[in-house]
Image 1 (cartoon, helix red, strand yellow):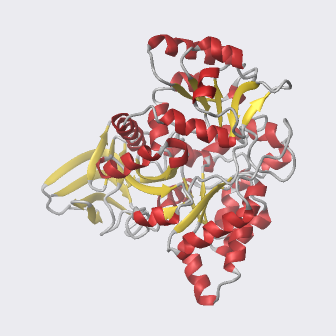
Image 2 (cartoon, one colour):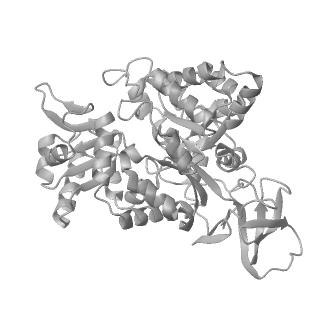
Image 3 (cartoon, helix red, strand yellow):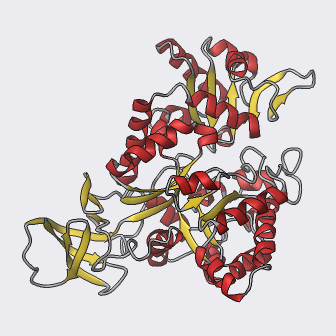
Amino acid sequence: MRSLYRARRVHTFGHPPTGDWVLVDGRHVERVGAGDPPQADRTVELPGATIVPGLIDSHIHLTSLGLSAENEEVAAARSASDLLAIARRRAADGPDTVLALQGYDETLWADPTLPTLDELDEASNTPLVIRRTDGHVALLNTPALSLADALDTPGVERDAEGRPTGVVTGTANRLVGRWSATARTEHAIEALQLSGAARAASHGVTTVHEMALPLEFGPLDLETLLAHRRDLPVSVEVVLGLMDVPKAVELGLRAIGGDLATDGSLGARTAAIGDPYRDGPGRGELAFDAEILEGFFRDGHDAGLQVGMHAIGDRAIEQVLGAWERIYHRLDSRERRHFRARRHRIEHFEMPTLAQIERAAMLGLAISMQPAFDAAWGYPGALYERRVGADRAWAMNPVRTILDRGLELGVGSDAPVVPVDAWATIRAMETHHDPTQRVPRADAIRVHTTGSARLAHQEEKKGVLEPGMHADLAAYDVDPLSVGDVTGLRPILTVSIGREVWLA
């Protein structure tokens, strides 16, 4: 089936740079051109519209994104009392085995004080788990703490008398996530992943890099995704969040590690940073011994996999870079060339120093960032400044510097941490809190298309609209390159690998 899409303008981000029609032959672009179009089996008229390549989200969690659609009121909560009221209403609605909520962000509250364990117990007799927007903190009532078998696990916060407060982080948080996920059936997981993928398509996203975390969401979550991912409305590249190299090879996956965390998050004060937090104790914690991390990197590289790791704080980034440098320095020239071609990844990379950026560039590492974090937390008085102070906050998420130093850079949302709104990501690059780090819109779009494609070694398939490339495109009723502000921009049509998956 040959389909012709006729629009006012087509931006290919390749050659030719513009046209007014795209001819699609099944799954692939056959031609892009201007003037009289060729014959086709069907013609889709898009008068006044502009077509651009489909956007690629380089870091996403589909099941959690699907859950976020059921938890919009949690994200909208602006106090502990709001959050408790939601929990009470949900607890009264049904006899769920586990009442699982997600998406609160206490940094948006006038009073950031979290609910007490007694208040959580009062809100629900059912085991209650409320996860923070970044997924690195959860609030549990007593039944959940007991049934999750988490009370003796590192990460359970306790008061001066040694009594649990209901707050869990780190190992305990991951254990609780896995335990609460066991309440979901395969059918429920399928529905959540479909919901998340559909939401991505509705924002012009045609490919996602799924950061699978079996240790946190259970093996059924990954098994379900692998079984039906080709039926989802977006193309899904799965990154296995385990250190099990043989498992990744067995599953036929090309990437491992992904969002497997060397540290936590700034919101939870668990990101590993060099100097202490400004508004709380400690410097966060590293999750892995340096030798274990280096061994995993070496094993993954030797198995032919692309290896990634979540690293937010400067101390976590230092550990990751040090491990890679020790491996790289033992290689000869030919082996180093192959190493650099692998494009091993660092996810987030929020707090790098200039020296760390240069070292990452020398190693040929690829960086996967979430610029919308800067829009949410990077401005004066926002979360970054509260956690680490104005000077350190000002230097965070340096996207322009990373591009200028020649690193491979792709971007995503980490949805549902922030919405899967690709144009919000592009706007965040345009309006970075530091004017010297701002990225012009056309360059920002390239980062969100070809940049993210290169992170997954898909530059020969995705990112531009040229003959032979995947037919991944989105049409808009305005020109995204020339409209004044892309806030709220949504496509009227999204096509993923030749399938029309979203129609406004």
